[in-house]
Image 1: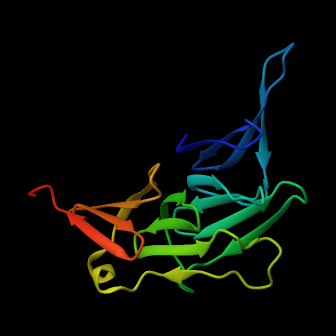
Image 2 (image 1 turned 90 degrees about the horizontal axis):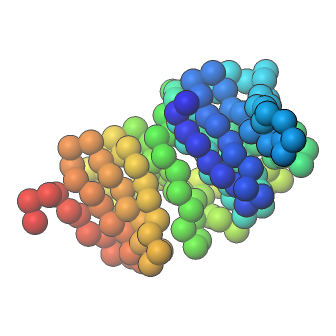
Length: 171
């Protein structure tokens, strides 16, 4: 098991190197797991639910998949138009969904339904500080809606509004 997520209905989602599962709770008997989209061989690194109840599936080397539980449809989004995109972590702020990847940070507006739009809208952070923001392993949004990025060897970056603060561990 590589990822766990509880959605707005308190359903537990489980991500493994062999796919995505949802735990089917049964009050009178043993709970079971249901394999979601078994025709896809997801190597799941993170799971997130957007405000439209789509399940975002971050994967190792295959980018982003979005599962619409209402229709059962799965949509693949290759964030950089490159093969091999690895999503390490995802988090949602008031206005954006953030994805930490080994290639950098990608965002998508939270108010757009990715499963109903013809083309998904993704932005790669390209501010001056972005050039040093590679190998991002974790993204986290705190209670003040600040977005934090944990890197491999370059400390932590905090994005608050339009300002960025870099913490190296030496400050």
